[in-house]
Image (cartoon, rainbow, N blue to C red):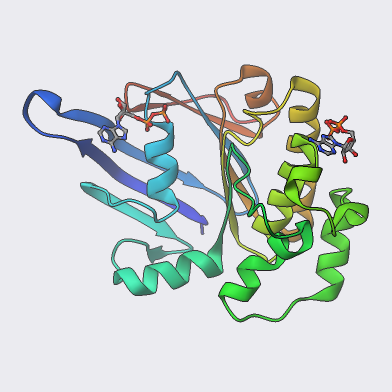
Amino acid sequence: MSILSCRHVSRVYGQGEARVTALSDATFDIPEGQFTVFTGPSGSGKSTLLHLCGGLDLPDEGQILIGGEDLYGMPEKRRAVFRRRTFGFVFQAFNLMPVLTAEENILMPLLLDKRRKDEAWFQELTCLLGISDRLKHLPGQLSGGQQQRVAIARALIAKPRVIFADEPTGNLDTDTGTEVLSLLRSSSRALGSTVVMITHDPGIAALAERRIHIVNGRLKEDGAE
Ligand code: ADP
Ligand code: ADP
C-alpha cells in the first residue's frame, strides 16, 4: 500500500476575478521510503500541494490518504495529533527557536508530544548529520548548513513516516545544499521514512528518485529513477 495517496485533489483560492486554481485534479501515489520532489516554476502550486499532503490546508475536492487513512476525513483535533505523530517538517528558513540550543530545538517535537527521548536514535541521528559537537550551540552560533542539519534532526527525532521539506536548500549555497540534501536522504533512509520535497533547482531535483513536475496547478510526472 502507498504511504501517500493523492486522489483528484483540487484547491482554489479567492473568488470572482481574484479566483486562482492553485491545484487541479492532482492524482498520484508515493510508495513508502521513496524520495520524491515536486518541481516547477514559482506560483505553479508546489507549496499548495505540499501543505495539502502535510495536513496543513483543506482541499476543495479530492482525498489524501496517509497509509490508507483519510487525512481530511478525520476531525481537525485528531488530524493535528496524527500530523505530529506521522510527519516531520523542514523549512527553507530553518525556523529554529533562537533562544534554545541545537539540542533543545531537536528535542522540541518530543516535548510537545510528551514522548521519551530514544537516546540511541538521538546519538545516531546527530552523529549521522555531523552535529554532535554543536549540540550546546545556539542557532545564531551556527552556519546555515549546520542550522539546516539541526532542523533535519528535529524533523526526524520523533521517527516520522513522512518528511515534508519545503525548499530546504533554498537558503544555502550549491555545495552546502547538495550536502544537506544527501544528509536528509541518508538520515531518512536510516529510519525508512518517505521524503517529499519541494525544489525549483533542477540540479537538486535530479538527485531525487522521482520528480513530479507542476505547471499551472497541473501535474506532469517525469520518468522515475
Ligand atoms: P509555488 O509553491 O509553486 O510557488 P503556490 O502553491 O504557493 O506555488 O501558489 C500557487 C498559486 O496559488 C499561485 O498563483 C498563488 O498566487 C496562489 N496562492 C497561494 N496561496 C494563496 C493564498 N493563501 N491566497 C490566494 N492565492 C494563493
Ligand atoms: P558550513 O560548511 O556549514 O557552510 P561554514 O564554513 O559556514 O560552515 O562555517 C564554518 C564554522 O564557522 C562553523 O563551524 C560554524 O560553527 C562557524 N560559523 C559559521 N557562521 C557563523 C556565525 N554566523 N556565527 C558564529 N559561528 C559561525
